[in-house]
Image (tube, rainbow, N blue to C red):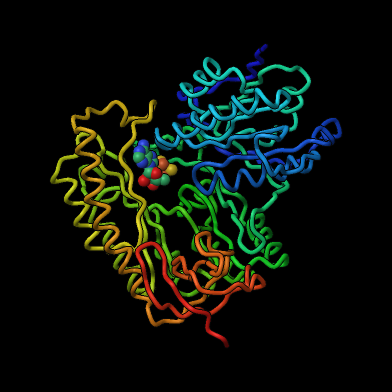
Length: 478
Ligand code: 5AD
Ligand code: SF4
């Protein structure tokens, strides 16, 4: 198949932070593309973080604007898009596996167009491998040009060629793109894109570009529209939401945004992800003062050891992290705190690992995503010496998880006997006689009911039993 390489990824270029002002564009589709999806179906596989889920909603919106209709069977659709994640090697291995399945499907469905987007194509190695070993992939694009999808699709369709366009720029902001949201009661709202932190293990600042905040008016208007449409909950998204506004040079921070969004009438506000270094008092006060800001905070700590934190370029110490937790628990006494932890960072000693366990005991996180360090080519940590065996890393992960699970359970048990407000998401997967949803503290709650009219509503549920991963309750009739 002919190849049209419009542009290839370049991690060196992606690392640069040159531009002062971020350009903002208004999304529009030109007539030339307006019906390229007529009589065609699409299916998107989404991997990774909420940022990717939000991007997939934009991609769906754009495709439906072009006339595409969502397929029920991915393997029979005209267009399959894999929106990928590059954060760890195992995330990438999953994608290579799915591609293997798609190869077979394409043999039975020759007209199927296969596209790959998201963070993986932003890596040179991944895109080269896609070009060398996966000839049946028709279109490769990155995180910066999903708004060019109509043009790219037309090119791939018309020229019957493989099209590659991955931009390694700092990125722009697009307003006004259509979104096909997955839920009718809760919505993702991007408040910023990219990341300037450059934690030494992390590929995200390279795949997502520089930190760039949306104008507060655009965010507030989006939330107001969601309220009008009956949405109950928004989750504000950014790699480091606590840095919101810094790039705009205005005296308006994330805390200010929370106070303003609280006035829109939205019932629940959540946000992710936070950086401990940038979590400020105003944000904590907003959590205390604004009824709509939910009492849950995901505050990734990564390690409890000062030397490892320094090597990770996290810019805080064990004690500084604890101090923020003390303030949070004082101002928002009912708060639930969850975190992310990496074990087996290059040359992490047993003693350094024990400092992480100590911190888990001190904070009593009510949940944690725990990971074994994964080497990401192009990041500073990839060049660090590492003499810790994989076996040892796995053992540490197991030891950490035992402790994390203990506090997970305690976090659910502390609500036993209490009545909590649950925003109902749908029918429980494992028991069709149950509904499930999340409490204000982001506890997954299951309760017996087959009344589907409750989906999308906030209901009162009395917690009967806290388990490790969820809580069981019963509806309280008001
Ligand atoms: N290896 C393991 N975990 C990682 N994370 C980010 N990069 C890596 C990596 N190279 C984890 C961090 C981050 C979460 C989203 O993924 O804990 O907070
Ligand atoms: Fe990665 Fe650190 Fe940015 Fe989070 S803050 S996305 S861990 S570089």
